Amino acid sequence: MTVLVVFLMAPPSFAFSVGDIEIKSKFGEIFDASFKISLDHDGAYEVVLGDLSDYQKLGLIRPSVLNSLTLGKPNVGSGV
Image (cartoon, rainbow, N blue to C red; front, side, top):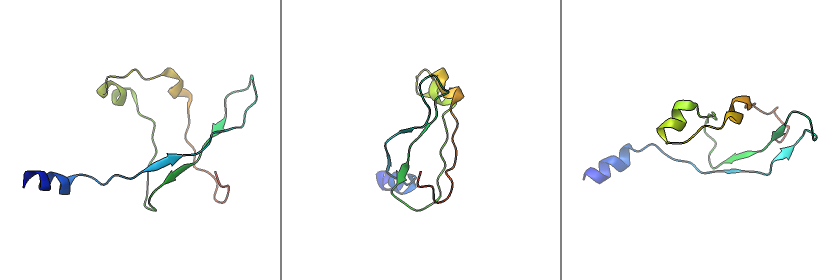
């Protein structure tokens, strides 16, 4: 019975896939690229970059390059 209760209390999980990366910058320029994330549901979603405490909880080192990454919402109809 305990297993059933834990199963019913577990948050739902969804699958996703990441498409090919599209590199927009040229050699020597600030890196600019994008990729499509496809979700297996139509509900709301949030995409975030883990902060230092997230990495520490997992016993990982957070690469400093993540400090320069930005997330942007694509323009409607852009397909990216």
